[in-house]
Length: 216
Image 1 (cartoon, rainbow, N blue to C red):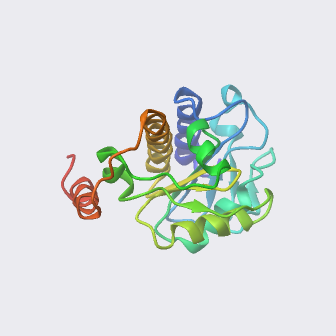
Image 2: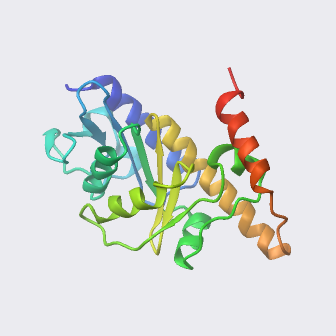
């Protein structure tokens, strides 16, 4: 079986999506790109998360052609592969329709940076990308456009949902969790009143510290 360890990792990470209330039924997916072979492991289309196994993961090449797997790959495969081809430092991609973040996407608003945690993780607002239909590379194009001039590993797409990227699949899942958590905080704050903005220079300091100093 090709990429057995990566299949196991991607399968395990899929469980984090329902565990963190980021998906409903079969919506949402995780993929990872192998740095040596450039092959991509992605969720099969239409399977509920409790039925996923390492063996059911699908391996595709960087253009989305199935290399190994008995099931059809996710309907977002072409977009995941487009992101990998155009963002060479990305080795993990996650897509969700998490509620609070998608609510911002539905009204066509980026998620503003009002928390220090958001400054840490995203280095500013979570950008809004344009609308595209599912099934081809167009969604991937919108993601790459949205993230091109942003420090954020995440974006939301108009009327659709969340896409996150990372140095590996775990980092992309973490970004998806943090996207929804901060979207919920910002939404609740907006119900209470006018959120207090964080100065851009302080956001830059938060992001630098988190990226270069924080942790082990």
